Amino acid sequence: MQFSAKVSDIAKQRAACSIISADAKNGLSPSGKALDQLSKGVISKILKRGDLGVKPGSTQLIDLLDGPSERVLVVRTGKGDITQVEFRKLASTSATAVKRFKDATSYLCELEVEGADKTWQAQQIALAAGLATYRFTQCLTDAKPYPLTKFTLHAPERKQLKAIQKGMEIGAGQAVGSNVARELGDLPGNICTPNYLASEARALAKKHTKLTTTILDEKKMKTLGMGALLSVAKGSDEPPALIAMHYKGGKTSEKPIVLVGKGITFDSGGISIKPGQAMDEMKYDMGGAASVFGVINALVELQPAINVVGLVAAAENMPSGRASKPGDIVTSMSGKTIEILNTDAEGRLVLCDALTYAGKYKPRAVIDIATLTGACVIALGHHATGLYANNEALAQDLLKAGETSGDRAWQMPLWDEYQPSLDSNFADMQNIGGREAGSITAACFLSRFAKEYNWAHMDIAGSAWKSGAAKGATGRPVPLLVEYLLGK
Ligand code: BES
Ligand code: MN
Ligand code: ZN
Figure 1 (cartoon, protein in one colour):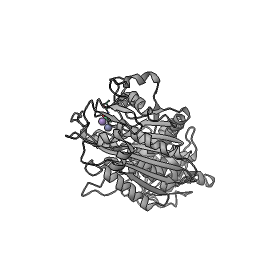
Figure 2 (cartoon, protein in one colour; figure 1 turned 90 degrees about the vertical axis):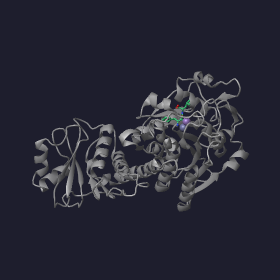
Figure 3 (cartoon, helix red, strand yellow; figure 1 turned 180 degrees about the vertical axis):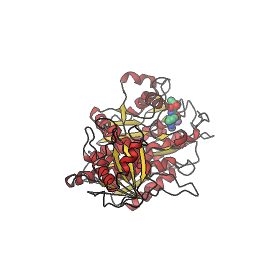
Figure 4 (cartoon, helix red, strand yellow; figure 1 turned 120 degrees about the vertical axis):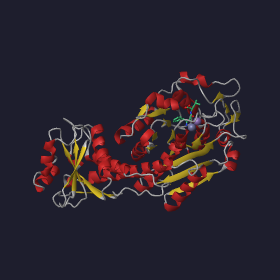
């Protein structure tokens, strides 16, 4: 999508569709009024009929036939002040409604939003427009992308143009990153293998000078002693890969922020095999890895002056004669031994070695992202990402980035009291706790490998994809992470 911002006169601005708003009393925004006058009151007459829904975010399309604006989309705002949650809704429903036109101009920056500035508004509009036009087409013989390729944001005043441009660029970058993550997530497990992810990383590095990629294969992992990661890949015919993407935007001396993504390209559960229902959705078990790819893509687009390493621990979890068995004990790269009581708790096994490996970068902070536990979905549902951290400032930074971007997380406890559930009779620890607090005990497991640095863990099991009729990857938490990194 090509985004631009300008002070546009709706009476002259050519557009396939212009997006304006009407409040609870059918009061039009300034450009809405101007367009209504130009079209001899047709907009206000149609609104009076009561066709436009009363719920904030309802939309109505009106054909103006031959005006400079061929159509107008009216979107309903609520009573009183517009909240940020409401505005996001307006931005996304209007974007969805115009994606079948080849271009659109949004006048929604004319609205005032509680506690938000024009940069924020522009960011939300661009992010919503970018997300709305995502369509998975790679495996369809006859699907075309949506026509919308040009999106203009109207700046009410010239002095607001810079702020709107800035927000627009951030939102557009977040959308590009999210859509990269969605594409990788939606790809099936037979295409998106650890090897596929590795070649994506190599291809990306070839295109961008600020990016370099190194890939550790099975042999290298063996020499490093990554017994936990390797124990997951053992049962699969697909070899694992530890992918490191270095984005170098800052000074060489500056320590990086490291993102670690769980990249289980398919999670069958292994010998502790999962039940069949919705097992196809375990192709999304590389959602953490996908978000790391998404963030790296956003960074090469936005070019911030920071250093970031994206680490992806990629493997497939399968049952076979060579697979790990319940009761097996493995030695992780840290030297600690782990009793595998359930081969379906594989995410923490690949992540613990990746976390130990991350230490070698002397990182400012390490953030891992993982579709780690079904228990997190039970705890938080699909709206919030579960957040854990061993450093409160880092936790607060990430929570704030979630609020700003609209890609929200909720902090969970990482108390020592939960740790003993991982005690094993035969090894330094076991890979599962009891039935209770499953998302927390998984985080506790990871925390044991992240003692050397500031660390946060994001359990995206509930937020990375949608099930049901709208099945598909969401691209979360790319907006949150990009927001966080731009503030560093
Ligand atoms: N990838 C799953 C977690 C998951 C399950 C995410 C369903 C989203 C939806 C993970 O590898 C897993 O299987 N976790 C187990 C852990 C258990 C064996 C302690 C789980 O959540 O059931
Ligand atoms: Mn599993
Ligand atoms: Zn898994």
